[in-house]
Image (cartoon, rainbow, N blue to C red; front, side, top):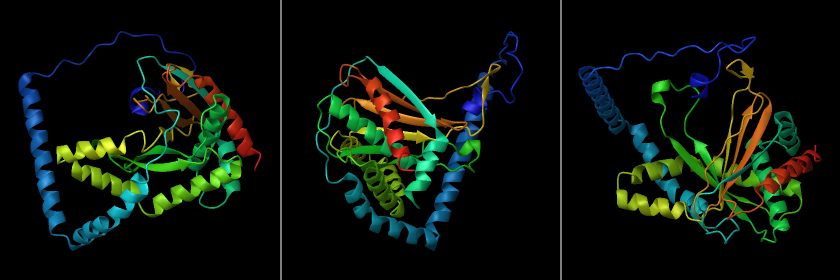
Length: 312
């Protein structure tokens, strides 16, 4: 979306002179009606054809049977047991405070490679966040037990056409070993959990489960409420790969890129990471009345990355 709407296609030598924008004429009612009806008919036709093909496909029936047999283990692994109370299980108001920090993506990759086969950049990000929370908890006299985080997972793939895009997102849960003082062991424990989730395709199973329940609204509301409760996870940590090359906006190079993820009631802290041209930007967002000292989390993440880097 950013590449389509914001980034310049090339890097100009100087900022362009402002011009006068003229909108295209608004479409008439008949044109809008014809376009809407045509789009609806195409969607219905595609859904019917797709459903018929799926119903007649033995392979699809085998896949459905496999998904159903794997579902109980996935739900047990992801949604049970319930976690303990955490410092982020607090009511929030309308105030927000944010803090940012950044590091070289190459440093995270060196940690990834030094940690061994199967470790990913996302594992390193989670380990860095665990170290930051450990430092913050110690400074604020909060308990440092295991803390479950929710990891958003995109179900899209890079080869999708623009008209295939939509909200197809899932999630995983992972316990951050905040109490573990050894950064190497923290990273190893996180990697063991994420590998297990990926090996069992938990994100796909959860997506199918909640997508199916969405057609039965009462059950969907109950299941979503349970999965989003503060005892299921303490905070959400997202990591999005951004542009690999430098990008420009209005004639100037974008130096850093950060994201702000909105906290929720009883999930009073959100952490997010996004990369840009060899840099990884981290953002923390909270209600300062619920979680004080968000700048300490950003500083703690710097220390945590350095601590992990010392293992290389």
